[in-house]
Image 1 (cartoon, rainbow, N blue to C red):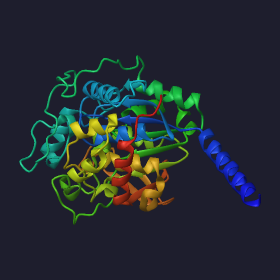
Image 2 (cartoon, rainbow, N blue to C red):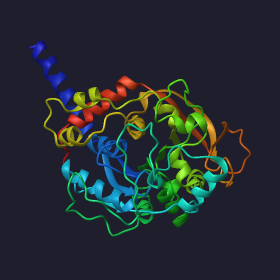
Image 3 (cartoon, helix red, strand yellow):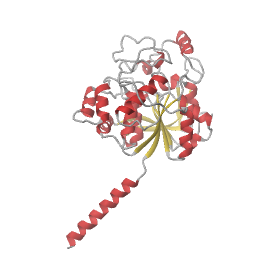
Image 4 (cartoon, rainbow, N blue to C red):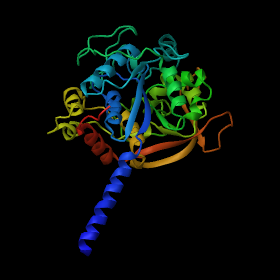
Length: 372
């Protein structure tokens, strides 16, 4: 009798714990991304967050960067269709930076030397590049998609307005996960001066502080020769500065430093896809491009599980917007030790647990699709 009572109590406790877990609201997030594809870090980082069981993706806002906005929107819509989540809104945003331009970048290079990477402005890839990258084309061109054309349509709203609307709708509940250049986020902050303070937090993939120069590969040339320059900030430096100064409660920066040593290998693809028939696994198996560092996947992983961070430190952070040799460079000081011009203290991730990163990616990709 006593044993039966003990078992009954244990079962009741387990049911209570299960019910409590089930009643926990999912974490709300807006993903802001330059989602060129179909393979590569950009869309795979979105896929990770969409697949997370405890996360509600309110929408994916798109800007230009690695690719042009119109093409990025099409790739994102199609990816969400293929993994069974066409219900998630995709919202078009900025096509061009606030101030920077392709023409100004060309002139800058005549004075200060070639940038190793310019995203959608890359007219010619260097000879050492071994991984397939997007071909140069005009901003309003959407080439035929390898994965097929999307049947769903983007939301008829600007990305900046969508961000403001959702932060106002769910005050204190929404994380903004900014994985590309920061034009959309900056425009939202200017559209509504108080919206940033309503967010739960801002997590960004951006900046370069002191990456490990001993791990040199074809993707290291930017920070080897320009150690403070990182693409997401360099595409639109003014937007990055505006974003940082917008008044967020908490900012976590995942810079280039934290991604050095990561690699999206064929072994990672196999671990995520072998024996799994989930729509996400089928997508990755078909379109993944091994060889890239896991840039944006690292930032998604830090949002999904902050305990994956192996090393971090607080720093005051800003961006150089003088149009000289250091245009777009990351500026930093000890926390609280900046010049006092509104630069925020941020948590800078310096390293992550790479085996856990790879395991997290595989586990999320293998999951069956969530109900909307």
